[in-house]
Length: 111
Image (cartoon, rainbow, N blue to C red):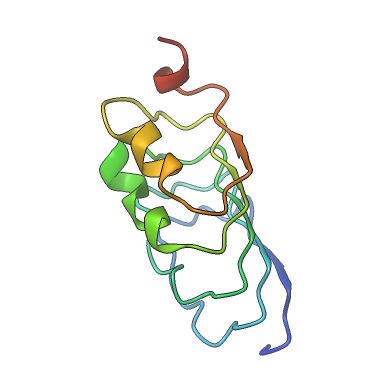
C-alpha cells in the first residue's frame, strides 16, 4: 500500500481517522459521509493535497484545528458539517497552499 495515491472511505460509519501510517504517497483522501467528530492523524501524509470531509460531524474550530498541520493541502471539502463559531475561518485560512474550499451547508457561512 506504500504506492497508494487515492483512498476512498466514504459511507463507512467511521468515527475516527486512524491507521493511515505508511501511506506516504497518498494524494487524495475521501472520508465523506461518515461520523467523524475530530480531524486528526493526517499531518504525516506529506503528499496529501485533496481531502473530502463532507457530511461528517465536525462542529467547531477545535474539531478541524489539525488541518493547520496539513501544509500540502490544496483542496478541502467540508460541505454539510455543523461548523460554527469563532476560529473556523481563521483555522482554514492558515493552511498555506489551500486554493479550493467548499463550506456549503455549515452555519459559519450562513451568517
